Image (tube, rainbow, N blue to C red; front, side, top):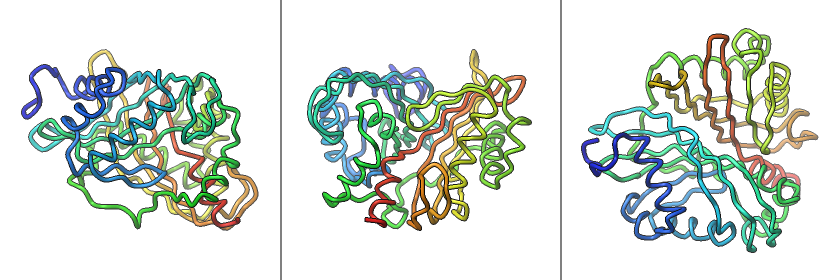
Length: 317
């Protein structure tokens, strides 16, 4: 771990450790200033943020609304070297209480359980590039709020979403690694975006465990087929892109993969987002997977459906 403090035994330990120090240790300003570059770039479906002060402000706002938020790092799938820099795909399971008014509306007092995935590039002990998606649709549903209604209110307030045209090219321009498990997951996703859903029984374990946007848990081939078919059906002509892929084999863990992908095109079909609107939509998506002897056995896919509804509502009024 050249360039990093000696107390970190490896890159996952660093990612898990600094997350705990910042969020649960409440050392927001000092630790973010220490662990993030002053010009850090963070891309989220809700927009692009630059600079360490923006990261501190966003963290404080979330902690104000969800003061007891706990971030449980389920996995860190990574690539690279300390010398060249490393990219982590960090899957987080958060518990929290919606205790105060904020971005998700008036306080409800409800407890939530939600996932996020953050891709972070770090070198010499600092994160300077990040891609982050939270399951905001799942949070809203647990608070009793319809994501489409929330999106309409945000659009009426003048809120916008991230699109590739806003992107700033940062210090990380890598594509991950060439490990066979990352390639396998990319191949599965590309086949499903080609509407080859007959591949699901061939590539997925029959008892697969599935975690999908909207805080939905499902199991089995039929559930995977329904999710991916409904997404593709909503955007039948959209261009699907694999933007980053990692595969890893580590002791005591099954073979794993992390893929960041995007989908851009017209909302021109019936599917996950209701009646076709003709809206031009950009989706930033993350999928992580674990493989076993009978194929893909666990899948975690995240996109922010609230931001997708914002794009649809902005078009339709």
